[in-house]
Amino acid sequence: MISNDRKIANRRLKNLIHIAVTVVYFIIVLIQIDFYQRFIESKIHKIFNVFDTTNPGKFLTNNISSLVSYLAQAVFFLLSIIVFVIITKGFIELKNAGKDFVDALNNKFFVLAFLEGIILSIILTYIAILIPFKGSFIMIKAYEYQTALLWTKASNYYIPYLMLNYLIVALMEEIIYRGIIYMGIARAINRPVATVFTSIIFAASHYYDSNGFGIIFIRNLVISLLLIYILVKTRSLWYSIGIHFGLNTFVFHILYPESSWKMALVVIITFIVYMILDCLIRTRFAEKGKKIVYHEMNT
Figure 1 (cartoon, rainbow, N blue to C red):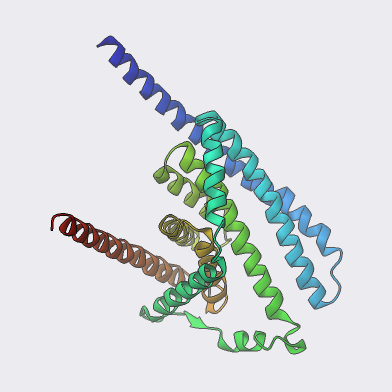
Figure 2: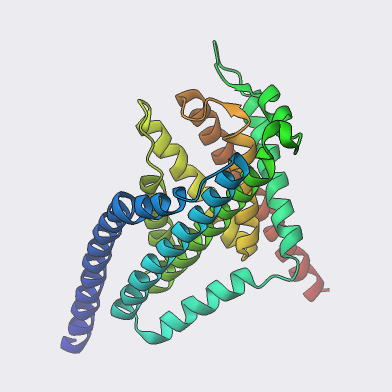
């Protein structure tokens, strides 16, 4: 009896220590993001801005600057998550987290997964446009997008560099947030904690100087939940990368204005409804599949 009580007490103490370590790590990550954005990121962009010459040259150096900036951020997060996983669960779970990350990127059909993610983002964007709002200011910037799509000197070769930038952002942010952070915390603690932790960090790091900061924060929170949901269901980061790329391109570039509370609200509604419906459909088909298997085994 005493040994059982002691085991329960030790388990509770261990859980409390894990919670305390997680809270401390959460605070450290927030400080890390603020420090990085204030000092490291700004210095990287200043270094590359020295080389700006023509408009195409400026677009190219901006993309290189973004890539270097994200790589530095990835190293920051990778080092901190390694320490966090080792403290909470040890080297074995750190190895398992690394395997999860490699498996999520190791998809021989990654191009198809990426394109499927883009298509899903387009469908969700179109549904979001159809949601009626009285006096809604949501509209498609068709002229600007058509001009950019010329891919010629008339648009200063705008679209190739813009698409490259969106690809860099989608690829690196999915690797950092849904790859390094989410998978590390999922192994160290559990998936629900990892989902909440990652989504809050993602939303907080995408701060916009806007009057609707609250609704924008919730929007980014829901976007992160959607991307994690897709990652868990497909076990591949490429679907999430495709959706992220599609959202940046078709939601936040074509639709105007990005930071309006109405735009944020339709995104929140559309994505939440999609996740609920998809979960219900998957659950229904899973139950039907189990009944079929059970019936075949008993006939």
